Image 1 (cartoon, one colour):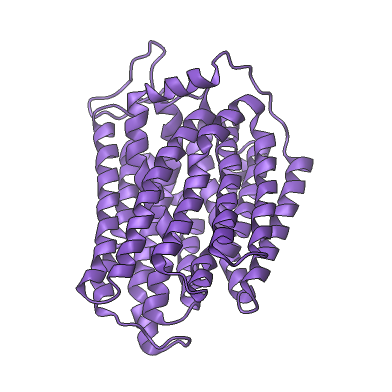
Image 2 (spheres, helix red, strand yellow):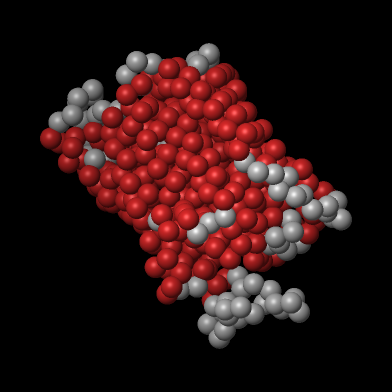
Length: 428
């Protein structure tokens, strides 16, 4: 992992530090938001809607912020996004009503929409041929921040949720200042393509649209790290601390597994096959919950018990499998995106990609929240998790088909796709 870090350009290494801080501040708050809202009396369906709106704001608005990154440059967008997170988490310290929580959540999402495509567009250009490794390392440092965030949050939540939000606000204030002082500016090439022409190019790129549809399973499933997994962990264990156990298991695997898993798959399979395998593994992570969940009743609230410890094991097993899938799927999806899209309009393509993912994630999040509310116990408890399994398999199937038919291969200078007989891209 250290050798991969040293092999990156200086600006890319700075982005790794930035991503660590972003996830540290984000995961201080978001893992505990569902529990906080539950304690205020909100139903799982309402919580799912709030989380879906946050994701919709973050992924949906990238349609505009990605295009802005292409035209204004990635650096100012990264700085602006961090500053907006300061405002968002500051708002969480002041509100408790549903409208206020929705506003704070959506502002958090808006901030992510501003810096998300910019970070990836900056890294895509800066890392060059080492993109897969760079995005895998981005996952690793992100997971490191996501490990420390919930641990610190678990300590602070015992005092008050507003204290957690206040600390996250301070983290993003430091990040904002740090990006202003340290992150180097990159030249912004002048685009001959207008905003509408760029959008038209994306919307008429059929293989990109198919890729975005298959890839939408990633965010639809990844969102369950904040909904289905923590809700089920708390339900079967009876204690809020079980939420931290889910995030610790996820982040440890992410930290130590992202780079080795990416290297292993890259050496053996095409990028498309690797991404499909990752999506299938993410969906399969909900199978242990589907099998064990219906038989598990609520544990005594507020304290650990032997039964609660055993009951949370299927959730942790599913989380482990789910995280392996994310570690495999994400780097290859980010590597494939400029191949099915365009480096010239990298931010625009990232923006549309996240928009499609946001729409799918919103539908899935609301559906899962409703299913969790409706089927609290008994055999029906398996339905939300079986639904998520099918989402992962559907996305994997589409990406696998695209890979096998050569639709994910990079274009040759003549404009044709360069493929082998199996549809795997030929080395350049």
